[in-house]
Image (cartoon, rainbow, N blue to C red; front, side, top):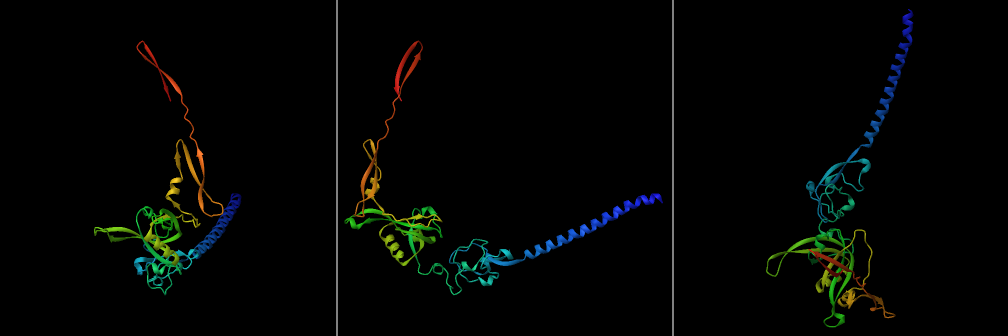
Length: 302
């Protein structure tokens, strides 16, 4: 009997431990279940139409060959998304789509526009004008659709006489490149030859200017940075001004500077800065040459 009483505290400790463990287990299980419920609620997905292949600007979406649907989390749906492929079939794309990009409403032309191509993506009041170029004019292929460019022209200034002198000038800035494709034409020998064709978005006045420039002078494009929207006005440059920009006269280098003339509003060459090169320091060195018992000395300049 005395031995049994000794085991009573041990049994009570075991029962208390088991009871505590059971209640702790139930509490942890309840917390885990509620967290899982929250995760399931937040993980609700919605089907979103995305591009299955790259789609160029002005293209018409043709059935399931060009688009597909993928699941998106409900709290990360893109604005203006479509969940049914039928909603975007036969719609015109107004901005390029890469594979996997969601086909959202602001990247599609209105449903009233049924004809694709450049005309579907032109902004109101704008025109599309194409000019023929080459690899140099297109900066060796670095000009692509979506880039912005400046247009330079080299042309003889007929206002300075019948012959006129060549003048290079930026005539248009910050033009949007809509297309940069290649067209096959016949050269002088009647053979097919590749020619670069660049289509830019312009106003009607710019269309007149660009057409005249391409017919009367030699065009060159200058690629602008994606974030550069500043308009820089230049006066152009002629051959004499180009040659006078750096001149070597005798032992002096002459840098020409252009300043505005008083009252006339015209620029003229009025000042030159002369810089004289420093004279080279001459050092004399004596070299001794020993051949057998003969010793010779030679002085050289370095």
